[in-house]
Amino acid sequence: MATQRNGFKKESFILSVDVGTTTIRCNVFDKGAKILGTCSSKVVLLYPEPGLVELDPEELFNGFIAVVKGAVQDAGVKMSQIVSLGIATQRGTFTTWDRTTGRPFHNFISYQDLRAIESVTSWNGSYTMKAVQGAMRLLYLVSRQKRFLAASVLVFSPQHVTFRLLWALTHYKQLRQAVAEDTCCFGTIDTWLIFKLTKGEVHATDYSNASSTGMFDPYQMCWSGLLCSMLSLPFSILPKVEDTIHSFGSTHSSIFGVSIPIMALIADQQAAMYGECCFDVGNVNITMGTGAFVDINTGSKPHTSVAGLYPLVGWKIGEEVVYLAEGNAADTGTAIKWAQGLELFSDVQETSAMAYSVADSDGVCFVPSFSGLQAPLNDPTACASFMGLKPSTNKCHLVRAILESVAFSVRQLYQTMLRETCIPVTKIRVDGGVCTNDFVMQLTTDLIGRKLARPIHHEMSCLGAAFVAGLGVGFWKDEEELKRLHTTDQMFVPRQAAQSSTELAVVSAEYEAVLRSWEKALQCSMGWYSSRA
Image 1 (cartoon, helix red, strand yellow):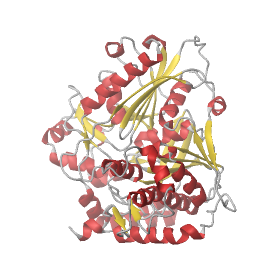
Image 2 (cartoon, one colour):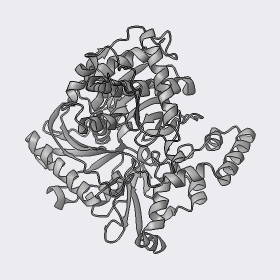
Image 3 (tube, helix red, strand yellow):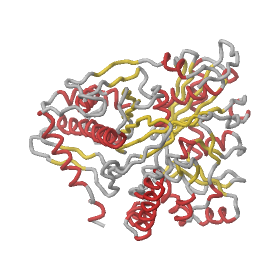
Image 4 (cartoon, helix red, strand yellow):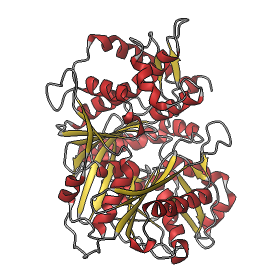
């Protein structure tokens, strides 16, 4: 996509912020995409009851302001030198607030929250759901339109906003009253930040964030009328959906002393994909962060999945819409942080050496499903577990089992993606904090049989948000220029390569039995919470 150059002075810079699951990070970038200044702070997660995960909206906004000021100060530049702001955010975490006062009706309800799991399970097994799926199947047979095929295999997930929003509408009287009076705003984190930064002038989101809520129809490119009607969700509270590169207004001058143009919103996984320059069909990005995500660029059409891959809008820039097919395992990185909290190790950097210090995991398998299992098994009632513990098992075996579970999850998602999309993979990039672990990287590349490129900067969502924000004001010319700015730290090469771009590598004898045991452990973990209800 070409953009008009605006003749920026040499001292102009791009600001981007990534509001992730555990960290808010802000970077200041120069023309060469070099980070001149950075600042980060922790996202404080609240756990009011077991299974409930929340964030304080005002605290999150204050953290956002703090990291922006910190990064600009760290870069040694002035706010007036920032020509564009791009924002990447975690997906599916939402709140609602009063349009007039800006006061939230409740905390952010995180995508990790399980308060709606019973409703999700009930709806997925209901006669209404079966009737809708059957009707959609008939419509597909008549019309051959893939959006009806997608609806015929629709399965709700706790990660989607839908049922958590229904829960909020049921439990918060002020929220229901505001809906009735048409003074209610709904928004994911990006929408809330824009509303606050513009002092209530803008209530909007972009296509990448909207498509990640579970309430958006990527085939029609609008909020799903079918879903909202079926579940009685009020259309009036939903934000306007704009292009990824769009003038979302400017920050109010009282916040940073000057008004900064907000030129881009993008969901964090899509931002990582863009930061890795995965612009072409068949480009794959694997993110190993709080969860493991495998995204493939499917081009100008959404992919219709029957195994749980989710069709997402990657980004919409002008007339160009790029779609992704995504599979995720939600808790792989969370498991590593959990293990650190149990003092299995003191520093995450130790884990690779610990895993290599033992020949195997001593038969131990770890299932990283603190919030259920996603594609291809799709069981929100699965539990996290260690299986195969013995008196001989030590800390190194446990750590190795956890790290192996990350690589196994990625392989499972990659295998599902190959089988479902039938798109030849042209390149694979990897990012996220866990990709700094050499054991995980080498095992993953061996299990899928493809070279994996690890970038110099592992947190790519910030760079992706900067890229789209910079393109929006002509700071960078086009995607070809962005490709020239992309840098690789290390290339991991498999011991045995896959025979083609649409196949997995043959698993070595060393890991064939281990993989079978892990898959058996997954089956044993499934249905745990439903069977104990």
